[in-house]
Length: 161
Picture 1 (cartoon, rainbow, N blue to C red):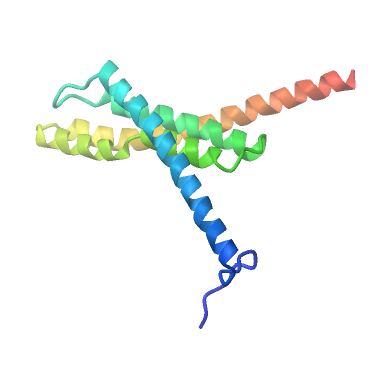
Picture 2: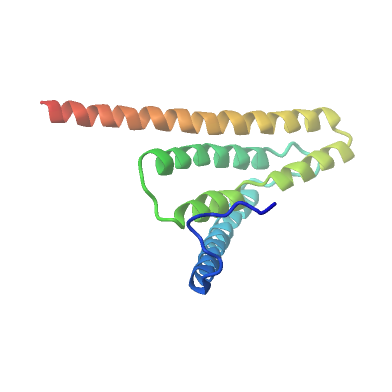
């Protein structure tokens, strides 16, 4: 049995193979550049609002919720209203917001709370972060779609006058 072949790519053509290689490096560079920005922003948030050892990690919860809200807004804009250049999604969604949100720190925070003898807050944080992230991304998409629809309706009404 042979693997399915992409009809747009002929891997026996050296020029197309080089093109694929170059495009991956550009995407990787965009993700890395965005990741540096997002990680620096998250680090800044941790410096502005530090969490004491054994305390509830409000900063991480807030960063993750804000990141999810922004990705909801961003993906509606680039998917439904704006044809973004190919590097924008990997740069911003994967790089900036991937570096800004920190679900690995979320897991470490849960372990730290449990180790400090706070299983109740750890469980609340475990469920609360997931709930906040889902609510935030849903709110971001819903609100953005409503705002964009209202703007389109206003423009249509002005043209009708």
